[in-house]
Image (cartoon, rainbow, N blue to C red; front, top):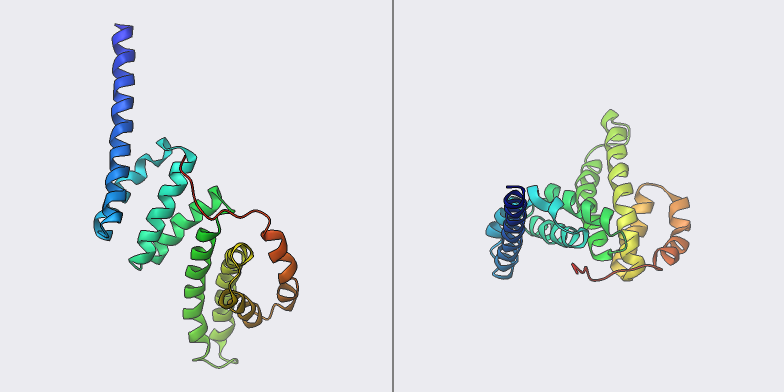
Amino acid sequence: MLLFGLIFVSSKAQTTDSLLFNKLGDFDLARFNNDQGEAIRIGESILPDTAKLTAKVRASFFARLAKLYEDSEQDTKAIIYYQKVVAAVPDYYVTQRALGYLYDNAAEEIHLRLYQIKNDDPRYRSLFDGYKAIVLKALPHLEKAQACDPNDDALDLIRTLYQNIHDEKGLNSLNSRLKNLSKNCIDILSDN
């Protein structure tokens, strides 16, 4: 009886694992076929089981799901999964760049509102503080991406963000940070 129980548990685990990997295959097929809606639906059905995936497979899956959310303009969800990838693989600069630009987009919306009110308006300080908080979230991600894959436009954006939040110290130490950040860079996620 004990042997039957062990075989049943083992069989059930293999079935669950194969179902999960079949879902991952379906997820990738939907992505390959540019069926974002179906890929997101399948991806969301995988989410409850991601703890069963290896760390590398999980990070790769989260990166692909985040990209789908980003491409379908679901930035809040994209940020959640990009953050998971960054936590798991901080040197993967592609995700760092994506996350930095998503934060920058959110900051830009606030920045535009700052131009619509006067500096002495009581709402200005609160709005500026919100803008600065989001910029400070964006900058480390943009800097890591810039350090690993230099780009003049990204560098200009980073400098502009420091100027916008009046952070001369951050701006003046940018080059040394970029040099340090460039030491460990990953450009392709492997799920092997």
